Length: 147
Length: 402
Ligand SMILES: Cc1ncc(COP(=O)(O)O)c(C=O)c1O
Image (cartoon, rainbow over all chains, first blue to last red; front, side, top):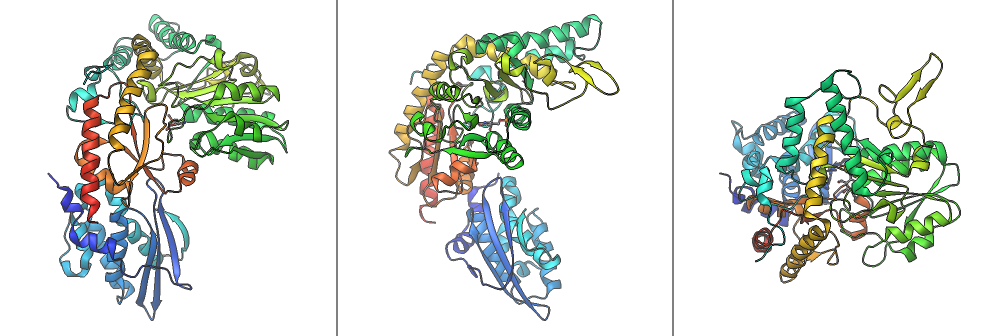
């Protein structure tokens, strides 16, 4: 039986209360992603130079899962190549199904979402910002998107 | 504590989930055994198509299917020719907007709506207004968030062609003074469409007394099956508006260059309908009538008052509609997103809705992104409320440190 504390742990709480890389920067490519069914609403920005992710920013409103996931994501993606970032995002998509990646460290604090598969209604909250980053990295899309 | 109604055992979902506290009846109500048995009976004893075969079983199916029209007509106090079968409130409201909107609305006409509307009441008219260059007017809500007759008069004019308003808000639980509004609207010749999705399950609705032109509602919010609903239409208008869906069953004659349609209400019903659902719904009405709406109202009011009393002693929550009329309580735990709160409630087996409840205009009016909503209905008890309140307290405590 999954316990609520598996979901709302210290790491998550820290990211929710002290979000890293929060606030948007003008000029960055950005994507506004929403989950219309619950009102989670996050904008993700990625700044890439010479194939390296120089900066990731996020801002928005949503539940603790959604906000802390965006914060944790921004931390792990900064400094990575696009290829590395894509592979980390893939790991995250596996993680939320409950599968730990071979290299757990690569996911940084995002590893705390390993229990989210026990709370199926919340998976969308955890993945919202990651899907936005995925779209920014791999398509020309910017602006609005319902995820 | 003494319950006005004690009927949990009539509802299989509650029998099969003994500890469940179901407070999401605004989304859909639970269904009693009698409704399910009636549907089963159709499928197992005479489960064939309606209006088509000339054999005995088809006759029986058609007969049972049409009986619901009589039951609904008696329930609403109208003629059975004024009862149109739909797929639900959304379907009915869309059908009315398409038919009336495209055939009777012209440039410059005004349509009155409100911020209390469910999206299915508002969006079809937003679309019509765009297409027809008509204007949408919003009844200004009063400080409490209610539609008042006084404010309605501020937007009513000789240009008003249609008034489409909710009878009971699915977020605030307020009952609109619709009878007085209808009276005023008729003075300028406007057609009034009433969204009864949340009112018909809770209060006695008599269409003659209200004098509304149309009323739409869903079976599934009043103990009936999903996928079925009703539109009441005053016959002198219903018989004049045009169908919006064409196909089998709704025609009298078909020629290569034109066709003749059946009379209302049958011209609005095409394709094989949800037959079991229509038949099952008659049992839902019988069940509600057996209890009686006086009792339903007093039971829900008793529980709502009890719940509001208890909630108001908890520090750290905001209730948005302390004067709710139909058992709907909308609130937030301060600084806690509704989805985080519902994780705790869910763990305590309490079912509430979290989100914008398909009514974004009123959530914006409240100045929030989303809320929690607890709905009390006939099968709820004081014990349910106690468990709910305890869980809310736990939630406040849990996230206090956050
Ligand atoms: C006030 C109101 N109107 C219309 C609807 C739409 O009903 P349905 O989803 O059954 O079509 C609802 C249901 O949520 C409602 O609460």
